[in-house]
Amino acid sequence: MPSLYSTTRETGPITLVDLSGRIALGEGSALLRKTVRDLLETGRIKIILNLGDVNYIDSSGIGELVSGFTAVRSRGGELKLLNLTKKIHDLLQITKLFTVFEVYTDESTAVRSFPE
Amino acid sequence: MAPDTKHLEVTLDTHVESVNLAEEMCIRVAEAVGFSEDECYRIGMSVREGVINAFHYGNQEKPEKKIHLAVDITGEKLIIHVTDEGKGFHLSDVPDPLAEENLLSTSGRGIFLMRAFMDEFDVVPGRTGGAELIMTKKLPPHPGPSNHGSGAPNSDATPHQEA
Image (tube, rainbow over all chains, first blue to last red; front, side, top):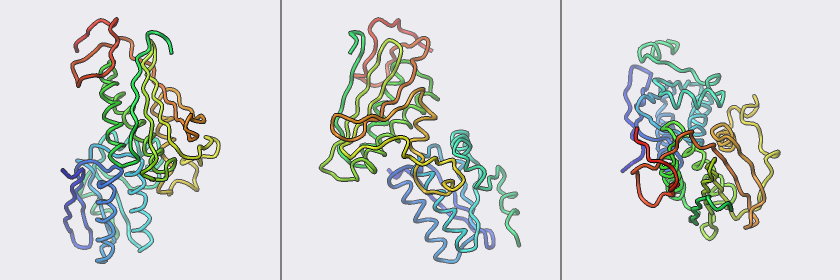
């Protein structure tokens, strides 16, 4: 059984990636990497990762989020986070990554946060 | 080892699956000695990060090398040892992942998480020549054996307690 599932939705130039499961060493981190890379290759550089159904993330997963963030930014885009669970919220807080990522609790607000 | 110490030891292959196996095993033990769900998560995450460290940095993902996981339960503490067969390292050489220049690093947070989630954490030279990570968590006030899993080391002298 895959440890992470990913589906994408598009709202104009913005891509919402709904993730569910575990972003951890192995296939979870690999799937996130591939998802972001595939979006960038098709020119989708405004990305929101919906982590509402992600129940676990380890240091490998955190590294993959950072890797995605820097890859998107290097293409002139933005990668933002939506709907963090408490565990992931706490992890981003203690690792100071809350100061790096834009984090939203409401999808429409996240979508509107991208410049026109 | 003190006479009332329970000891569990396994040797793991240098393989990604060992990370999940070690995490699950230690969560079972933590549940059995009465840690809360949150504490079990923190202990599991710490073991996971320790084994990832051994797998990736210590053993350099070389399949011929092993990862040694040991769990001791004393009257007061759960003590977990993760030993690799690498070259060892010093904690003082590990970059601070909270430093401004390291915030966007894609690795290097495992040691930080173990230190954050466990009561005590140290790295010493292991008997295998590699690094031995030692992480300790004080047992909860009223530990009690549970019915989760089998073979987890419980203290026979501890009264049974159901939630």
